[in-house]
Image (tube, rainbow, N blue to C red; front, side):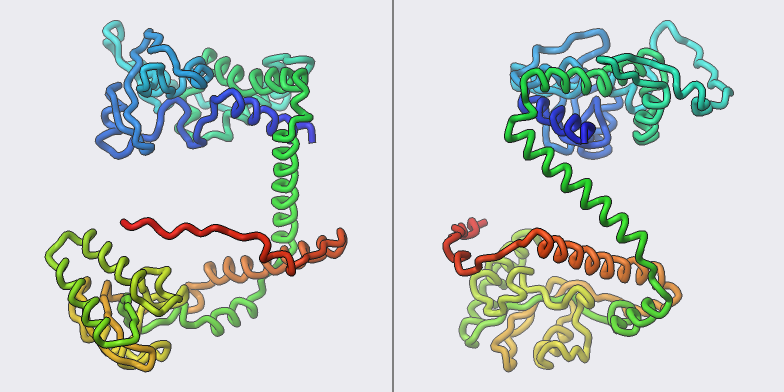
Length: 408
């Protein structure tokens, strides 16, 4: 519980002080947008990251522009930060060290020979040795080693030197404990935000532990897997299909109007054609089930439409298969549902996965279904245990305002 509170309160202190950062693999640089931008980062130049920002380099030995408000912690940790001038910066030396890039200097003409020494984990005795003492708490070699080894291999390369290990120890254990102690002195344990975070973290841990317990108790039998395969054969054995979408209206005149609008943008870029199609679907289609999917037919088990697909009117199926090219529009065609304007996409080859080859996937699907069922049953038992009561007669008093989607 103390560890849970420690993590939650530390996270809150960071948030309150305005130094939160997105959680991704990299620490000292933001992930580059593409290979070209990565090459710029590797060369120590300004580059564009996946977050859309341009990060400017702070050369080795330089301090960099003063950080903006709320960015000092990032600046002190030599992580990407925003400066007072509104621009974003990264420290080249730290970024390259994390990426495993060795910067050549004028003094080093010869390449250092790689060490042939085999790196071994600390022995049981070494693991007990202390690397830091913080407020009476001893951080051991084992603690530091385990923390570093939980990081990705590429990240670990940045922490092989004694100086880097000291910095890592400072950034993790030391800061965490001193911030926690300072938070306690400020009585943050009574802050509603902290209490809420602790409660949520406790729920998360309980949920994870229960799911782990249930998963370990479930054994999926061969008979269960065979039954799942037979009951869901359409997921593993399918005929040739076509991915298609439609717009359904009540009258032929409206269908012809839609078709005319779609033909107007036939020579436009694909993005314009797709955008026009989606607008027509939202504006006219009476098939509420497919409207939210842009008119796409099919379901999670079989996305395409087969030649003899019994799920749809035969007139609709025939119209789809009559269209020869992907992206083409067809119709209007009448069925018992109404008048259809049809758009064809890709053709999917027949699918025939035998049971033996599908066993791994089936085992996971059966496990998922049984795990979800067992977890719901456990939740229901907790509701009874703690006397949960619902009052649906008051649900209508909770009015939700739904804004209309903006026109694109």
